[in-house]
Every structure is written in structure tokens, then in C-alpha cells.
Length: 203
Image (cartoon, rainbow, N blue to C red; front, side):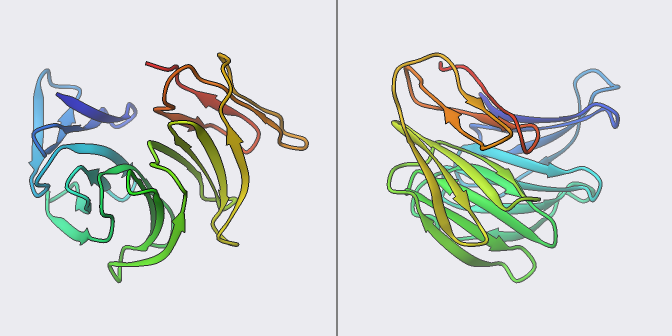
């Protein structure tokens, strides 16, 4: 079962992560053409992010690790340890930085070159999804009953958004209020600009 996909249409490339513990790089111009498989994770791949310009990928797995890949060679360039439960979301930033969230109730900031954890943020509950705005140093994380907005630079939680039943989430660009509610666990979030947040529906 495919758990995560990332698409770059101009390059006609896609990356997928699967329950079999592998990631696969695809050529979309050739039907069913797998360019290469990336092996290393010991359990399901739950999350992935890609820097297509640099041909780099970051993956998170149920095996509690992150792996940093070269898409050109298929080599694993770094394996990051620290989470004590599955890695639910990953994000590649600039300057060799990365972020991850986990069911172990933490967010972590990483230095990919040094292969070390820079910061651990205690979320308080299992983190099921995460969206990062690197330009502004913000991360929005979802858990079964709430969302939290984190400031990476200050290493503080700016807002805790407790769940109430509704069908929408909305962000205003002026004073940045957020209205949120879901009938089930929050499973994914998309930040398209500093002003707007687009949620994906509950399962």
C-alpha cells in the first residue's frame, strides 16, 4: 500500500513511499517506469518531502527514523535517530535544515549535514500531521484533538487550537485567527501562503 506521494509535474517525476518500507522514483513520461527504488527503512514509510532542484528526498518511517536520500544515486546519505515512535511528517528546509513530527508527541528540528537533532519541541499529544512555513519559521501540527502553531525560532507554542465539531478551517491574513473543527483525527494540512491554510478532509 502506498502511504505517501510527491509530484513534480514539470520534471515528470514522482516519489512514492510504501508499506513495504521502500520509496520509489517514477518517470511519468514512461508508463509504469520506476527509475529506482530506495531501500533502508525497516518498516512502513509514512511521510516524505522532496527538494526536486537538488534531487534530495527526506522520508519518515514507522521504524522511528528519518532518512535523507540522493535521488540521483539512490543512496541514503543520512539516517536520523531520536524519535521513539513512528515519524508522521517530515519537511525539508533551506541550509540543511529539516523538521519532523511523530506519534511520540514531539517535533524535532535537524541539521542534515551534521546528522544531529537541534531542537525538541514537546507537543503534548501524538502528532499526526505537520505543515511548515520555513520562511516565517512556523509549523502547524495536528493531533487527534487539537492543533498547535509553533514558532521554531522562539521554540514556543503560539496557539493551541482545541477541537470542536465543525467542517472547516480558516486562516485570516490580517490578525491570523484560525477556526478549526473536525469530526475525526486531523490527518493532513497544507499551507499555501503566509495567509491561507487549506485542510484536507477527515477520513
